[in-house]
Length: 457
Image (tube, rainbow, N blue to C red; front, side, top):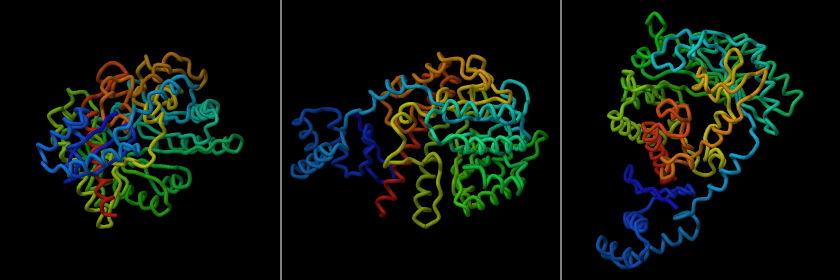
């Protein structure tokens, strides 16, 4: 059993980690739970609370309230998930999502791009329709009874290979006629080549679109310029505003996705800038980069970033109450149902349920592993030929990582990113500590927002 306690925005918050139950309590109950986590001696609990509060009847009332919550299975609950991980590790592999690297090429020169302007440790290339179709065939054949299949068009810049995108989508629609499958396509674009025809097509065929923009003009143009140095903000913004409005009107999903770095630690202003422009589905994420890069997030940056998340959370509450709220991706937590138990334990499914496909058809565990030879898993012709690597990824979960065992956020982040672990520790079964600290703060803010808005109902 584990209870995480913290104070935020004037509230005393208790998170019962195993059950996911959230409680907003008064000072006495908050302190009583803290004492009860330190000792089970009832006399000692009462003695310590009497020294602090001095009112025996109030103390007994608080302890009775805690006992009632415990009896209801929402406080001091036992860990329920551990037995499930063996079932997950031993079940047959079912692939349900592919990231198609439709273009290992890009028309921007983003400074923080892990794909090296689209090259991914290799050469520039565009996926052929034949490779894309074989990838869909592989997905259908290896998806078991799974009906909904996810396919992301990724790059580089996917619109540089637009006709192939359309041909692959058309092939997927044909497969749907002969197989009990439903393809949900997503595309990520920097917007440079976006036009009305592409927008209209995406509104017909793409379940989701991801629009890359970092926030304020000076921030965006510094990190996302063209290769000759000119900024891209003024070109893409009108297109993104139009596209987002079209998607909203049709009830279709989209989000604008940015990256903040050491150079814009006041990133809450970039999120609010995007919201003020009219975007209501926003993700601005911390850059993940080697420490020697000038724009990398450093441990010294963390206090400022934590404060920025608090600023953003409080502003989101204010705007929601005013009827002009927006979603911030990292604060979106489902406190009622949430992900299935396997996703809570093992995350995105990279290397098992999710694979990346290069333009020439090679398989990798995810887009961040592309080009690293030791992680090549097969190709569209031979399928996955590295069962030992699949097994290694299956074993990655919140119980296999020492750092996760006592972390209150483990069932929200599911152990973090395997690629980040590899890049910073040399192995896939560890954690990226800066990322962990930021994740914990985001979970705190997300719970606080939910609590504050629930208190208004």
